[in-house]
Image (cartoon, rainbow, N blue to C red):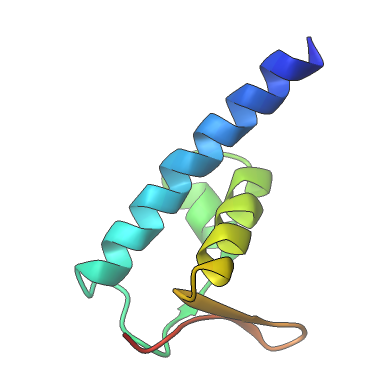
Length: 77
């Protein structure tokens, strides 16, 4: 059961990751724009956990910068 939940969450996080990355590459999100975990979760109709997972992946790839107590921002291309 746990594997099904984990795979399901990773699937949602993957979809969120692709959507945020698309918005960055299409310049819908400009370098320096602040990204809101809560707003994205609401826009996409999902929980915040997949958004956090997607943020971690995007940060690891250099697309966004997460600054504790400051926020999450799109990095320059």
